[in-house]
Length: 299
Image (tube, rainbow, N blue to C red; front, side, top):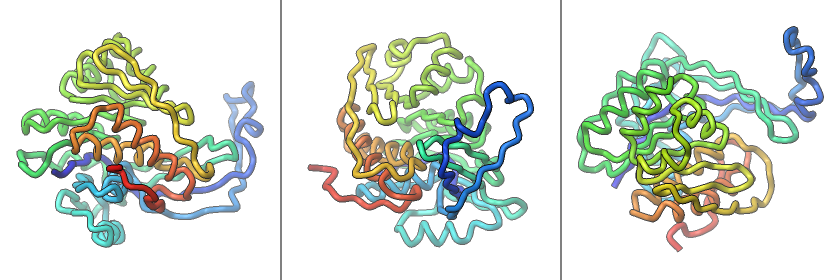
């Protein structure tokens, strides 16, 4: 069975600042903030949530179907997907704008500052989800606002179970909209900061949210993650990486593993364990789509 991955395809420009942001930003001067960071290292990678999740899922042996929008400069990304054996049949292209672009700066403590230009992603709602017997699961990852709202409703209409993982797109939605997403979704995943915001805006606790879906996962970075099912919490410990090199795309690597497990019908805790393991592989490599698998995910 395939997984339909609704999210962005983007080009990532990744820069490394060898100092610490906290040492350069004066808290009492934020009202006149004017800082410059020297970044000796710079590279351009294929990225975007849909692309990164698809890469992870394909690596594990799953069948990803990214649903996203590229701009006039998207030919290289289409070639990239083809080279990976990932279908682009749900990838659209618009000619009057650029593909989404993320400019990411990371300091020595792996803190990140990101500037994001959505570009063609804002037309992602033009992609439509229909009934497809080959699709067993889906995910709503960060995308254009209209696309996230419409794709959630389309998943429900097509009777496709899906994960709601709003990520950095969560602040775009008010409490009523987030409540609707949760009531439509089969699973919800957020990081700890997003989890607090989700609870604040909906008025529901994490336990409450977990009772409205089949499961809720709150990722905790280096501390692993929490799996909530019907109000009960299980802590899934982290996997120690060989090195901490680049956190860019770690969450997407985790999401790909989650989808792989859900495709297989695994319990949510087993899915989360695999996610932690794949995330540890990714953080040891630079770029969101440059790591390889060194274990059998089915073992």
